[in-house]
Every structure is written in C-alpha cells, then in structure tokens.
Image 1 (spheres, rainbow, N blue to C red):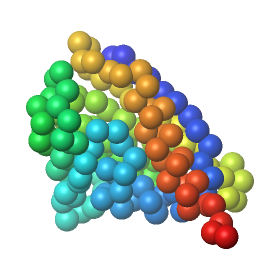
Image 2: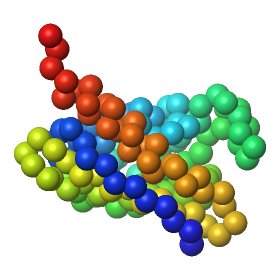
Image 3: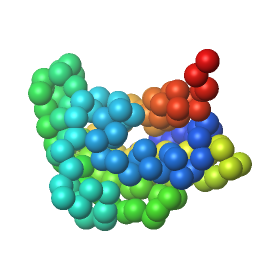
Image 4: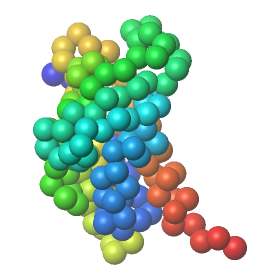
Length: 142
C-alpha cells in the first residue's frame, strides 16, 4: 500500500489545534479538494460517517460536484485523528505532538490502495493549509 507523509510545526497549542480539527465543518478549510462537510450526529467520533462534497473543479478521476464519505477510524483526543475517504480509497492519520506550550508538531500520513493515484504532495499541502490557519490565529492584530 503506497503511502506519503509530511510533518509541520504549527504555531498554536495542541489543544487549540485539536479544537479546530475536532469541528467537522473545518475539515474543508484544510483538506485539499474538499468544499464542504456534512457530519453525522456523532461528529468526531470513531465510526462516524461524514458526507464530503468536493470542490467544483472536476479532475481526471472525479466529476464536478462529486460527493463521498469520510469514515472516522480513530480518535484519541487531543493526539490522533484517523479517517478513510471511501470514494478516493485513501486512509489518513494525523498525529499532534506538543513541542512547547504554544507550538504543535503535526505529522500526517496518507496511504492508498494499490493502483490508486496518490498525489505525493497531498499531506504537505494539507499541513501547509493547517499551518496558515494556525498562523492567522497566532498573529497578533495591530
């Protein structure tokens, strides 16, 4: 099973990052290609199923307006969030490690079934978007 990973220091406490991650509607803010999320009533809980709506841009393998399912495979607050994007046949795991009281190291690993196209830069792009969101929150307003 091919996999790719990335790590990034986020400019926020692990608790702040977790609170952001734990809100299902924020998934679309940092995961590339997702425009909206409709979580089930369980929210971020193991076994929960969220409906994922892709951005309107069609790709080689996805039509415009595509929707699929995200299955939450594991949650260990405030350290681990693991999920499967069933339509894309991708498994992902995000680990958060506190490095200082106001900094968090995020490690993201994404794997795909054989013969599934796995963009090598996907985890890096996701963590860069998450970093930008945390950076915006950490930057003091003048």
